[in-house]
Image (cartoon, rainbow, N blue to C red; front, side, top):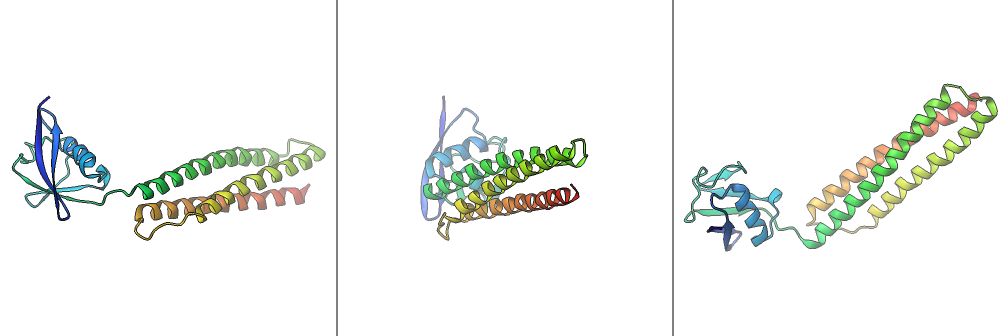
Length: 192
């Protein structure tokens, strides 16, 4: 397969980036830049002749980029430690989503209880069980918040900090909903 080399500047350094393709596209160049320099594709801004290159499907010929062109890369390399934190937050987010699915099932059970199809004794028993399940789910969310809180992030880890903030915001929304359901259960219980 034919290959072409391109000169890419990143900060004060110049890199020769090899693209293996007969008709390389911007996507091919971005992938090669990611491998050679370590800046992920979604963090890259490639500039050639004063214009930002953005059409990933366009060939480099269509974008008037040749092997002699000077290409400038703007973007930061992903720190391995920061990436580790981001992946950890993503796993916690999946855990929170699983707990949320269980909460939605519980909320459906609460709605069924409210319809009053059970006799008084069974309604009281169901209410007690639902309260225990709800407390367990709330505790699960709180454990995730605690796990997030135990992570110390360097001030330069902007992406990891943003991920942590969005995750905490989402879990707080989940906790607000569980609080509403707890009040709802108390109201049902008071009518029994």
